Image 1 (cartoon, rainbow, N blue to C red):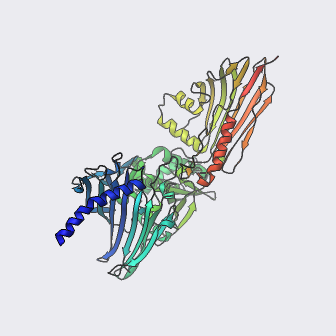
Image 2 (cartoon, helix red, strand yellow):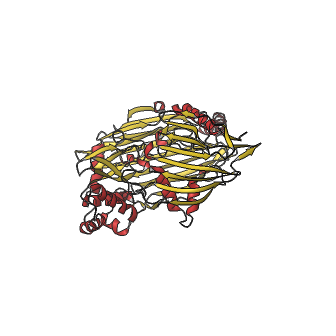
Image 3 (cartoon, rainbow, N blue to C red):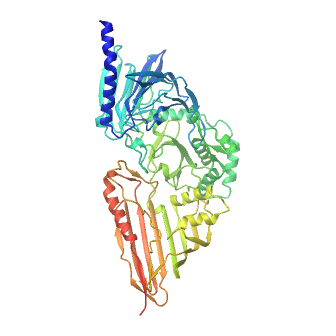
Amino acid sequence: MAKYLIAILFATLPVSIWAQDQALLTQFPKEDVVYLEMTEHLSISILDDSLNIKNMVKERAHYLTSNDLSLSRERIYYTSFSEIEDLSAFTEVPNGKRSKRVDVTDFQVKAATSGGVFFDDNKKMEFLFPGVMTGATTQMEYTEQIKDPRMLGLFFFNYFVPVLKAEYSVSFPAEVEVAYVLLGDNTDKIKFKESKLANGDKLYTWTAENLPKLKFEGNAPSRTYFDPHIILHITTATLAGKKEPILRNTDDLYAWYASLVEEINPEGDAELKAIVEEVIKGKTTEREKAVAIFKWVQDNINYIAFEDGMGGFIPRNAIDVCTKKYGDCKDMANLLSQMLRFGGLEAHITWIGTRSKPYTYEKVPTPIVDNHMITTLVLDGDTLFLDATGKYQTIDLPTDMIQGKEALIGIDKDHYVVKKVPVMPMEVNKVTDSIHLVINSSDLKGSGRAIWKGYPKVDAAYAYYKKDRSDDQRFVTALLTKGNNKFKTDNFTMNDPLDASLPLIIDYECTIPDFVKSVAGKYYIGLNMYKILNTQPIDKEKRTYSFEFDYKIDNNLVTEIDVPEGYQVEYLPTSATFKDELFGFSISYSQLGNKVKQTKRVYINTLMLEPSQFDNWNEFLAQLNKAYKETLVLTKKP
């Protein structure tokens, strides 16, 4: 009887595999691969009066075609805060009417250094699923032993391919308390269940099914803004009969941070004070001293990223960073804070997350909320956020990547303040370009002045820093180009682009060849020679996510052109305006004597364009691009 049942099972197995393939092909006709399941189970237990935390991961993927085999190369990332155990992986390869299991035997451990990171203790376990082809299924399972209860990570329910089932669960004993938050879009589709295991442990399970694939869209914020995910943290644990706080709230997070930096500057005070005294010599006001110290750190300390266990959280001793002339964000923040304090100023080490992290300390009181460290300076009653990794910022201009983010300011061992970094108004980030033009046959000859302030100036400084110093003209031409790609900078003068204290100012003379159209005794000249935001509208059918800008900006251009002797204005272009709180433009024309003047302003007054605003944005672009087509017409006088 048993042999008979086994024979039936093997006879029907190929049919069920074939049926699964057909069902998936019908459901996902345009996909190459789908995840059948992505599951993680976090097991929290108490072992020898300590927390024992294991995260058990399982993933199964099915290949509908052989067109995209990129997922067949698997990578498991981990750090010194975790270890990978019990890893197994295999491919179920179609083999006639059956499938054949082929195990992975070659697992390679490699460094997982990120771009721009000098040293990184992150590792990756890398391997290749063998025999992947149409109809194949891959499976991977492993256990991650988590060494620190504050480092639990997060779980995304979707991926870059469709996911049939995603499940995250956690089990924990009565001695442990946990909290969690569901973030992203469509979290209402995630089903939650609470149950008990046989040993009395609580079991929380979150399940989602038939999730569409994550799309890549340009200028979108990080996936943490919109992809459904869960962040779980242990709030308390009763160990050896004593209830201990882990991460209940921001107080606990700060207490842990403060413990890490408590002993970071044990020596070198006298040497560092001597350096500060030299830096601020002759400076009489607090602002002068602050500017001098900030600039010294910017100019003398090179930013090099380190990620090395607890060294990824603990700054190095200030005098060591000062002596070696390099450090990462936390090293530079600590050095800057120390130097400012030695200069008699109120400065504090500050933890912060960049704009890639949409979290608040109240909702997510875990290290996930932060990925950066800066210095907070209290000056003349104002709170300034100094990021020394930004080489060309002023003390009043935070780096653009932390605008609008909460900052955790460490006052002392027991006290902190949470404040938001301001979003810089668009008027701070102002670009102006005023040019006077004369017609020279089919060419335009011009002279003008262009000024960059705020973040556009910072961007220009970085561009200048990276270029060949012997080719200033190419740098200037790239900034000024207008009209057509034949634009030439004939002569120019500019101040030092790397001087953070000043706007970038360029006085220039230029030629725009072959720009004037002459037909039947008339000149046709398009005065919109620099078409800001001359882009396509957003396709609402294809775009799902918000559109992110680096900063708000206010562009102002004035173009004046001489009407040649013997000519008059036949057609003066129509002025146009689009006004919205978040974006807009105005283009106006006027004539005074033999001069025609165009005054143009195009502004963006938001960091994030939401999908609900796409219609208005598209109308703005349509009207702007229509205005760009207007042409000045000059004709010979009768």
